[in-house]
Image 1 (cartoon, rainbow, N blue to C red):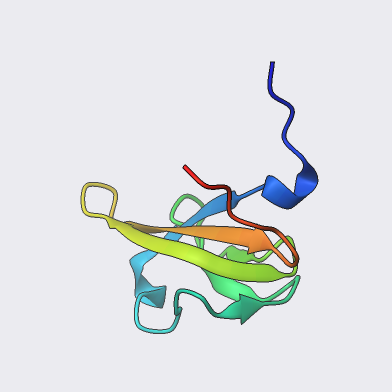
Image 2 (cartoon, one colour; image 1 turned 45 degrees about the vertical axis):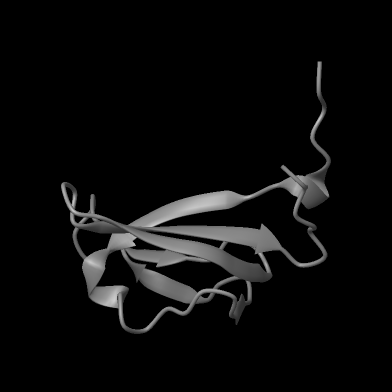
Length: 80
């Protein structure tokens, strides 16, 4: 059984596609930073739940959403 440390955590959130040109991979975000609007609930904001670095941004054509993966500050990538 493998136990993940908090440093190895990667949080992934979905936002609507309107934030596509505003978000940049490898940029830092603070807790409470506006990432975009929820694709599920009208006019609801999606805020960063942690201080961290945007690790990856991907677009889902079918759902027309962005998936944003955030690594906590001090988190390290594991070798594959």
